Image (tube, rainbow, N blue to C red; front, side):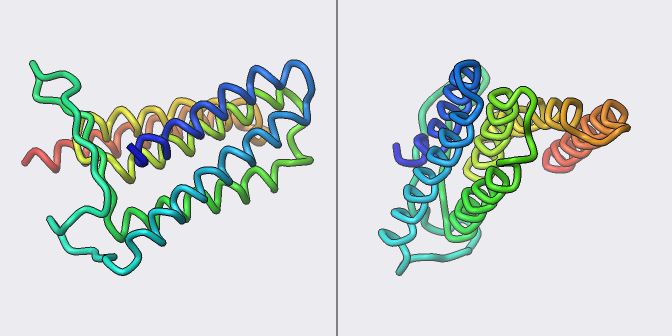
Length: 185
């Protein structure tokens, strides 16, 4: 269940940041930073609990795992697990997410709540990608990361931001489809 919290916390923090951004533009920053700090603490808890068993062997023992049937007719399950490598990537995601919040602290002045909503959902999607063991779930988290990334680029990007956002979306979708096709062969 701890792995589910690694995805729920930034998702909920993003929603809360968006809602509270209408009341005060400073709240989304603190909500996002707090959500990422909680995620970092959860990941560090996993590291301290299982630090002596960190391995990066294929098919090796998982440090933590949850496997629930999601769409049984299609054989799709909600299967999350963490090993040594994915734990390092989750820790890095939380740390770099906090860095992103800090770097955007004074730069983002328009639609602050919506920006932090998108940033937190990108980070939740990235975390889900690192934890997903089911291919359908992997694609779900991949798309969960791409859609808010489109809005971040399109709204707060440089002068060619609309073109860049569309290009970014097309390239990443094509790359994901190619990898999915490659995995099936």
